[in-house]
Amino acid sequence: MEIASVKKNRLKMKSKDNAVSTNKDEAQIQIRFVTKQQQYAVPDYPLSVHSSIIPEELNTLINELLRESNAIRRQVEFDFLICSQFLRSSLLEHIADREVSTEEVIDVEYVEKYYPPEPQDCLVHDDWVSAVAVCGKWILTGCYDNMLHIWKLTGSHQLVIPGHKSPIRAVAWITVNDDNASFVSASMDQTCMIWSWDIAKNSVECVQVCKGHRGSIETVGVNYDKTLMATGAWDNMLYIWSTSKREENDGESASKKARLEYVNETKAPKCAMKGHKQAISGVVWSDKTEIITGSWDHTIKIWDAELNGIKQEIHGDKSFFDIDYSPLSRVVLAGSADQHVRLYDPRSTEGAIVKARFTSHTQWVVSVRWSTESEHIFISGAYDNIVKLWDTRSPKAPLFDLLGHEDKVLCCDWSNRELIMSGGADNTLRIFKNWI
Image 1 (cartoon, helix red, strand yellow):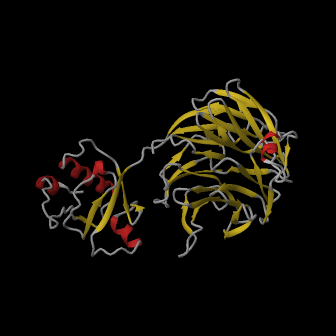
Image 2 (tube, rainbow, N blue to C red; image 1 turned 90 degrees about the vertical axis):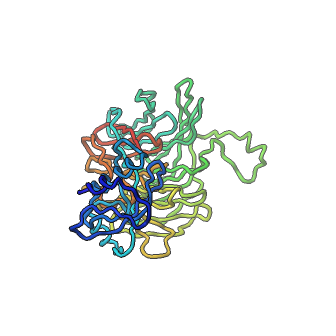
Image 3 (cartoon, helix red, strand yellow; image 1 turned 120 degrees about the vertical axis):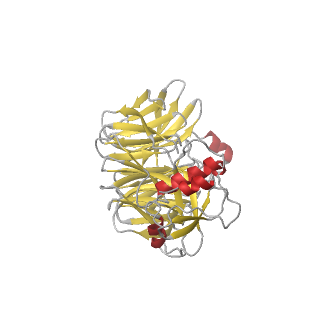
């Protein structure tokens, strides 16, 4: 790109009529740089650039503007957003695809480019790592050897927990504090177990066994106030359970309820909801009374946990293997057998409910997780051995591929904003340091 004229004039822009021409032999487009990152702000006068300009050239130009305004001396790498999507081609191709007029000034938003996540620890297990959940400084994993494991974020192994009779398919923390914690594990043995962990003594016991499903339990989700959990299984049923250690019978007084300890360790579900025609593979609470499920029957269903019924149904083309909900953007991610990740907006009243499709994986996508910090960022794990980091504003290509697994990825977690975790059929839990 020719920016000699930019350097020669030293960018002394004093009015909206001033323009930077990068190549006078090509068609010109008027742009205006804008940013929400005020440390990188430059004057918002319109600039003329050649229509075939690409992101690398825009990056050179914006850094020149920053140096001339004495704002930033170091070289900064930026990404550019036009019409709420990242520029991954020439400017002309991008705006042509979105039918943007070249007669008007086009706003080009720029954001500092993300650094790629860095591989950290690799925690080796004795069998497939099929479930992972992080809370505070603790990592909980479940394996195909029927065992649960607790690890510190530093990578040291804290505890191995036997109890299930078949491979573990899902885990979730219920509560964690300095002295004790509780968590739940779901297994192909058709049970969920609720565990109590005395952290000081590093001892754990199963306090309740949740029985009722007649097939492998594939997924478990705990609600926001940690009082209820939902499970989905190969019996096509959605069950809701109390996480309390006490049984509360409506006919008893409050004082008697408080004294009534849970004697029998077997717990029955509070309710059972029927509607799916095949296995439920993903479950997540979207608010206090709403549950979203994904299934092998090609549907996503939204349930009312108070009325015990289906509120909404979304149909897909293939089986869904995992779902996640973002309270920031209030939209749903779903990984599918057709190798795609899709973004659904159940509240949409205009156009299709499917708002974006993310294509890059070459095998089944079996795990998706939103960032807890950003409404745009998420990860996906697939049978192609790869975890991908995505931005919803760049649907045609992931930001980064997180490599390292030597066999299919089975589960992911991004509960800790600084650490991305993935478990696989190579018997490892891999941890990546996140810079986003």
